[in-house]
Image 1 (cartoon, rainbow, N blue to C red):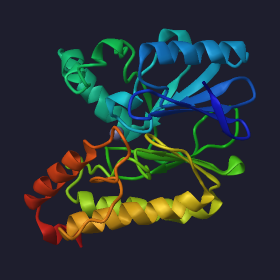
Image 2 (image 1 turned 135 degrees about the horizontal axis):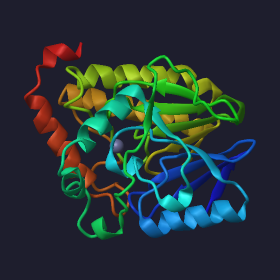
Image 3 (image 1 turned 30 degrees about the vertical axis):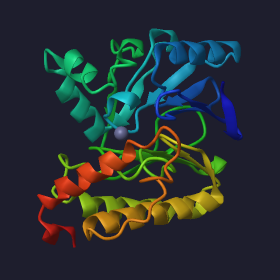
Image 4 (image 1 turned 90 degrees about the vertical axis):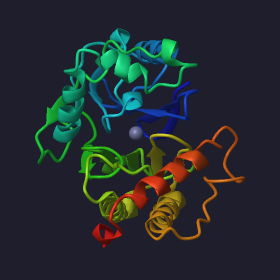
Length: 275
Ligand SMILES: [Zn+2]
């Protein structure tokens, strides 16, 4: 179930929304990024790692959305990290007495019973200027930006040429803007794409939070595609995006509805802020 995408970097794709969990092999164990979604998947992942003799020595959540914050006791008690903003956002949410019911309300009803919520979001925020994940393995650079969710971070494993993009640069999911965490969702998203563009030259393998793992050629192509989408959204222009409409991959037809929702939402946000 674990597929190697680069030396010492393995990916597990979930049944839910092609969510990618990423395993990075270190000296004494692995770093596990966005572990996954369904209970049986997390259990299988824990079994696979045990068979490989590779305990989880660190975890990381790319952003504070439920499908990137899950954990299972079988994965062990390693420290789990996120950016300071990511951790603060989820801490705030977990402080509500009814957080579990609220979170369950965000999960599709057909899978909610298979999603383990007990250990959701128990992450430590890394100080805002932290450049790399503190762990004993290949250096993992934190590329934080304000797009999609507060404290969203991509991870760059330079010596392996791997970019873990979080919920950006997907071949199936359009840019989903963060309308609540920022006053300028469009401008911030475009700035984030520029930031990723700045590291794109070092990337041979792109792992999006949802969708297909891409090669070097996909990095710039997906940055361009996401930018074109955000421009079309900003300008209410003609959208020519294979992820929306009849060309969408099977099972992803709902993305068109999400796009319509974003258009509507933006109609209520001043266009002048976008710059
Ligand atoms: Zn997300």
